[in-house]
Amino acid sequence: SQQGEEDPQALSIQEGENATMNCSYKTSINNLQWYRQNSGRGLVHLILIRSNEREKHSGRLRVTLDTSKKSSSLLITASRAADTASYFCATKYSGGGADGLTFGKGTHLIIQP
Amino acid sequence: DAGITQSPRHKVTETGTPVTLRCHQTENHRYMYWYRQDPGHGLRLIHYSYGVKDTDKGEVSDGYSVSRSKTEDFLLTLESATSSQTSVYFCAISESRTEQFFGPGTRLTVL
Image (tube, rainbow over all chains, first blue to last red; front, top):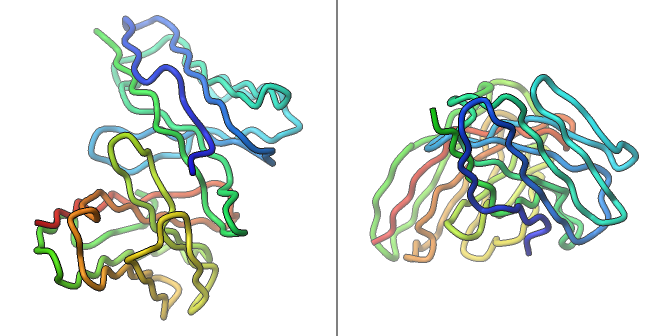
């Protein structure tokens, strides 16, 4: 079963604008990760935020985590055409003690030039 | 793609035939994972390995088996492929059990 759900499913903005996407999850977590997937490619790890952190930055990325609301957001500032991709949040798979990650369905981000 | 290759990259097969997908890594990472990605479902964990000959099931393991005889190779086998197994399959590796590095994927079509 999916742990994370991203919102919105699709987002189209102009180059230079900021893009915000959200993730909600169901169970308690130790950390939450964000990944990017360019069309036809594998996923690339972007950033990890731990449950005791509220905000984390990496370059043009800003991630927030609200464990009381079981939600996270990913902000991409000053968007570029190369940011066009699908973005996924991921948490540890919680089924039956197995390892691995559970992913949401993703937000498809399109940056219009 | 962080020293991970998947083979084949594309495969078309018929229902009922066995299929084996290979994941090969050069990073010497301990943990390896197989996921499938389908429209409307995101990525779902099939099986994973926490060492040579140590494997376990994930969320959608029915119809799949895996083997890991060497650190660098993780094989996913569909014993008798079905149309519902048409998907894009991704292998991932990890040393820390947190951040994962993904391969380029294998697109499998079962007719």
